[in-house]
View 1 (tube, rainbow, N blue to C red):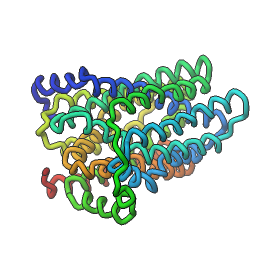
View 2 (view 1 turned 90 degrees about the vertical axis):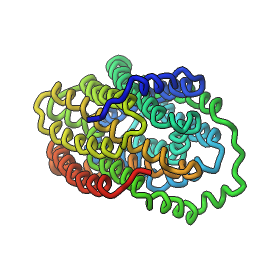
View 3 (view 1 turned 180 degrees about the vertical axis):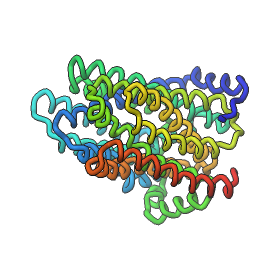
View 4 (view 1 turned 135 degrees about the vertical axis):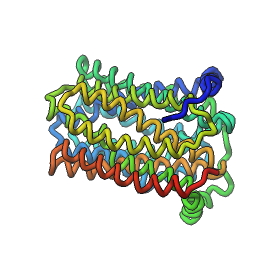
Length: 412
C-alpha cells in the first residue's frame, strides 16, 4: 500500500544521521522525548493513585493542549520573526521547572490533582509558544529535497522514545515511584537546550516583529495557507484524527485498570506497543520515494486508525490490545508524518513557522478537545463505549474529508 521505493531512498535518508548538525539534533531530541514519555506514562497513573476521576484525567490532557488554541499562532509568528534559539531556550527552561516542582512536591509536600493539572497548563502554554520554532528546525538544517527524509527520521526518534520512555517509566514506577519519573523528565531538557543553542544560528529580532505578531498579520498568513487545498486537506485530516483517535492513549490506563485490573507495568507495555508501531511507520516512510503523493498515505492510514480504535475497545485480551496498539501507532505515524511533510514541503519558507503552528493546532488542539469530550463520555458511558463512538465518528469524518481532499486537490 505504501509503495516502497528503492534502497537508494533509504540510504540517502540514513546518511542524514551522520551529519554533525542533524545527527546531534536527533540524539538530543531523542533524550528529551524519552523524558517526556517517562512523565506522560507516570502522570495519568499518579492522577489515578490520587483518586482522580476520568473527567479530571481528561481535563489534565485538555490543560496540556488547550493553550494551543490561543497561543500557537503567536508561536508560529515568533518562529518566523524572532530568534528561535532564544524562544526555544527560554520556554524549555520554564517547562523544565514543572517536573522539577513535582519532584519537590512528591518529596516534601502533599500533591493533589489540581496541582498536576495546573503544571500541565504551564507546560501547555510554553509548548504552544515554542513548538513551532522547534518543529521548523529540521527544514532549516537540511536541504529542501531532504525535508521528507528529515521529518521521517525525526519521527523515528520520537517513536523510539515512545518505546524506551514507557519501559523506563515502568521500571521507575515499580522501584522508586513517580518521583523518579519526574526527575528523569526534568533532566532530559538539558541536552536539547544546549544543542538547540549550538545548531541554530543567532538571528536578530526582526525590525518588523511587531507587525509579525499583529493579529491581522497572523490571520492574513493563516488565510493564505488555508486557501491552498493541498494544505487545508492535510490540516483537516490531522485535526479529525487527533479529535477522535488521539485520546486513545490518554484513556488507555482507565481501560487497562477497569477491564483487566492491570498495573503500571501493563500501562507502560501498552504505551510502548504504540511507540513500536509509530517507529515502524516512520521507518517505512524512509523507503517511500520523495516524489510520491502523500495525500493517500495521510488519508487512508488515518481511517485505519479509527477502525483500530473500535477494535481496541472490543478486544477482551490485554495482549490483543497491545498488538492492535502497534498497528495504531503505525497508522498514526504514517498519517501525521505524511501531513507534516505536505505542509513543510509546500509552504513558502517565510510562512513555514505559521504552517507548523497550524499543524500543531490541528494535532494538539484536536487532542485537547477530544480528551475533554472523551473524558465526559467515559464518565457517562464507560471507556469501551466511548472509544467505540470515537472510532466510528473518526471513520465517517475521515471518509468525507479524504474524498474531498484526494479528488479535488492537486499537489503543488
